[in-house]
Amino acid sequence: MTEQSGTRQPIADQMYAILLQQFMSGERTPGESLNIGALTRELNVSQTPLREALARLEHTGLVQREALRGYRVAPMMTRDEVEQLMEARLLLEPSLAKAAAANVTDEFLARLHETVVEFRDSADHADVEAEGFNTYWRSDDRFHMLIAAQAGNRFLELSYAALGGQIQRFRLFSKFGRTGASRAAPEHEAIYEAIAAGDGARAAETMRRHIVGATERLLGT
Image 1 (tube, rainbow, N blue to C red):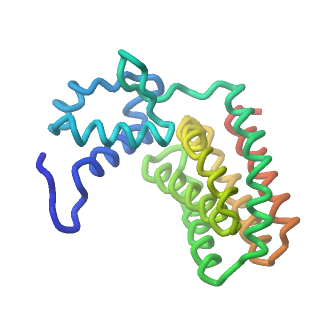
Image 2: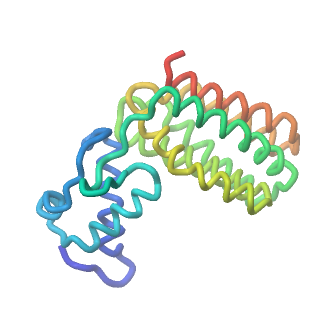
């Protein structure tokens, strides 16, 4: 594989996309070793772009690096980690939704609605088809990121971004038959409707219910 020019993706970007897809498809499982030498041979690429891609994936929380042992796919979240992540999100995301409801613009609502539609379209397939899960993953990420950005508080947005890697782990490990996307889709719609109406209190409450519901679905409670 050689470096591509023009508008095509650099090799590091290609490796990032390939590995991310392998994580989402379940081809590489939680805790699996990511040996640099084996990956260079398998993907027919040099070590430099591969290391760059792995470093970027480490930043997302989906890959971990251990001293003297190299990289591995992040392990499955423990029950305590899932519950602690819920607590952190509950402190932050209802406030972001409330603030976003006070800062709506036509452009923001149009982009947010696109994610709601994409998420709804993926709901029936997220647990059984790779493409459905990919759409679920990406639309869910955009939905929450758009709300965080629209809140208008850079420090709150950065706080949400700091949780981003762990939320990605949460999404990835919800893949195993428990995304609950068909139940989450109406929750996204309810959040969108509250924000579009400029109802900050309702936006906060619907976001709170969504976070609690997503956690309960992952834990099977």
